[in-house]
Image (cartoon, one colour):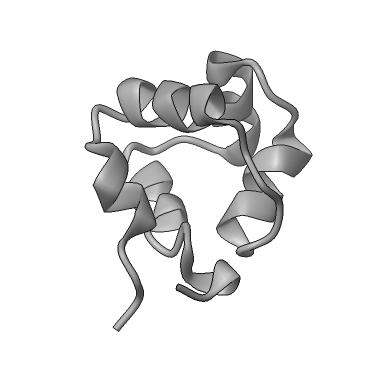
Length: 69
């Protein structure tokens, strides 16, 4: 799996929830830059961060990791 595709759906899911990167970051306890990096396919989040994002967005974890078509 290519690293730049890991969180290919995160930006879409966040925007569908009408959240800014800052709002999501605050709600899951990370910096806005962390969300930005994940959406850009960079960074290596902890499992806890991934679980918090998925729980807050009410999205299965595997949905965050689906590869872009």
